[in-house]
Amino acid sequence: MLVAALAAAASVQAQPRLVVHLVVDQMRADYLYRFDEQFTGGFRRLLDEGTVYRECHYTYVPTYTGPGHASLATGTDPRNHGIIANDWFDPNLDREVYCVEDASVRPVGTTNASSRRSPLNLRSSTWTDELVLATNGKSRVYAFSMKDRGAILPGGHFARGAYWYDEQTESFVSSTFYGEALPPWLVEFNAGQPVKRLMQGTLTPAGTRRNTTGDTTAYEKGIKGQKARAFPYDLAAVYAAGGGDAIRRVPQGNTLLLEVGRTVLEKEQLGRGTTTDVLSLSFSTPDYMGHELGTRAVEIEDLYVRLDRELGTFLDELDRLFGRDGYLVTLSADHGAADNPLFLNDRGYAADVWSDGDFAEALQANLGTNQSIRHLGNDQVHLKPEFQTPAHAEAVAEALRKHPAVAQVWTRSELLCGTHGDEQLRYNALDSRSGQVFYALKPSHLNYSTTGTTHGSGYAYDTHVPLVFYGAGVPAKEVFRKVAVKDLAPTLAHLLGTALPNACTGTPLEEVVKKRSLDGLPPLPSAGKKSGKKTRN
Image (cartoon, rainbow, N blue to C red):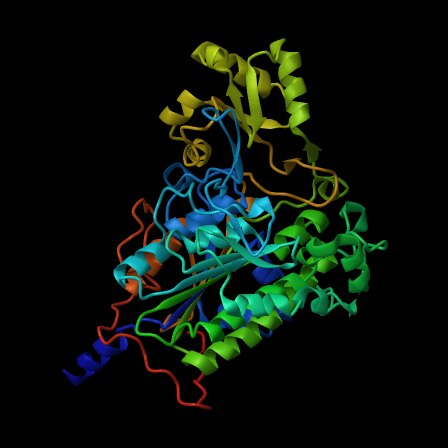
């Protein structure tokens, strides 16, 4: 009986004082393993001591930043949460809509109209919303990113604050959705001019170039202000050439985000209350650098080696504040990225780059007219109302099938009736605002420029991302079962004892979810006391 009681007690999981939700923009799952031997800090701890899902995928297209963050937060697909892309054409408004635009709010901390932002277009509740509701507003949610959508969508509708980087003021800003003024501690942080401080000196490699193909400058756009497109980087010259935007495109962008994360932890005393608090950090710099440099650049390896070290220091600080089991960390990404097609071409693999103009020309040539086309984007075609007939939609589909880069084409009615896996990817992003014809390019064929890379497809290089849970009693385990990104939100809901997000279609991950303690939050560690380390079982 005693053994049984002890076993039962061991299976009970205390609620964490703090959940740290980490999203690394454009982080392919294989980066964790390609650069593994150089990791000694945060990624090392997450891989060795966390529950690591090796086969986590997105279940829709297009795989972009907006829908990725929304799916992580809501536990469902774009057809339910409404963020079907970063931008989409709304036929009722007859214009493109940005995923977090909101004309009813005003910028705070800047006069830049681009900060009129809120979660207005997010139709589903998030796991953070449900936590705030479950605690009657006692739980506090703060979200930060170098992109507005990277802060707003993870923060949900009830965040105490969501803040994003504004290149005009070189500071973190917000909108009146979250309050009429920035909190004093953020005003003070911005006043310290951290961007000018960080954009000084010379950037030399932190890693040893073990897992790249060399400095492949032929496939890289390069970073503005750096003529050689290779190490060492003169940060002051990059800053002078790029202004406030420059920090987004060098590793110091990650440093800035962690600095403001530490500031809110201290100033708002997150995790020191009677309910669980949340800090969401979305690292946008890997996406900016990835778009310009591709997936094989030396600079990308260096970026992740640096982020590993900085996250290691950050986790050490969380240990000191809350104890090893007093906090929970989640790590994922909003999408992956493709290899540069010309890089692959030079190695004998058939790949190429295209543009919306190429597809418009193909429609003109193969259909005989573009008179019926209202809008082309996000790998779909909007037809003018008078041409929205099954016969004409099929004619457009047949014209697209003749394009050499196009792998598959579906009409809207085919998606609604289809059961094929690829069809389901598009169905899961189908919305009342979507077009009448959808198409998919062949693997490694990108609608992009000849340098750098992009993402958005339903292929594994774009859908396959990390998913890791660490801390708060989470076991050290590797799981090779295929899971979905939308499983993160219901898992956190069960861990925190809240309702599921209201449109949730994901499944809680049993390796992480245990019976939770009824005794509330674990005590804070004594001053100077260090928690013991766990090992992988």
